[in-house]
Image 1 (tube, helix red, strand yellow):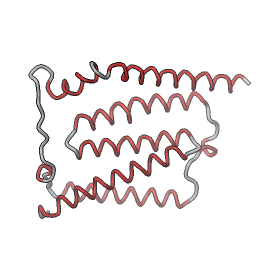
Image 2 (tube, rainbow, N blue to C red):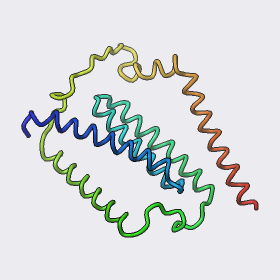
Image 3 (cartoon, rainbow, N blue to C red):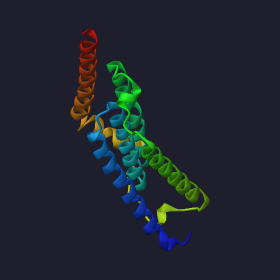
Image 4 (tube, rainbow, N blue to C red):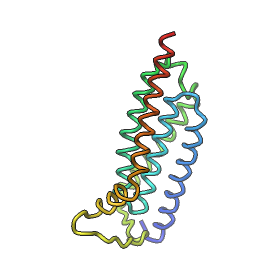
Length: 181
């Protein structure tokens, strides 16, 4: 692939992931089904992780997938399962043939893109200038992220974890009250 197309390819993917993230977030807040909303949130988290990777922040992108799209979404799916929502047909988000056709088309398009990217060698370092990183000898790059997180932003980090715990406990309490009646 000629190198003059690499900035265009990078920009295209940046805007593509951004557009999918915005569309997924709109779909997340407009879904009636909590399961469908959780799946749209996973799509948004993967797109944000892809944007981080494109900005040469691979560690943050991997943590985005592991922590948010992985652990937190698994917890929310368990909470949704505790609520016992009823029949799967009643909570389905996409009905009919059009949803399946669109999903199949998007799957084929992503598969074709992956195949095209694996067949042509690309060096994104030609597009994105390297960010100067100051790495201290004790913590490395992870220490540069973890240091401020557990020093300056510790209160916000802990408040977020407590907020998630309270939301899960509230969902369990609401689910038990509904089942008791």
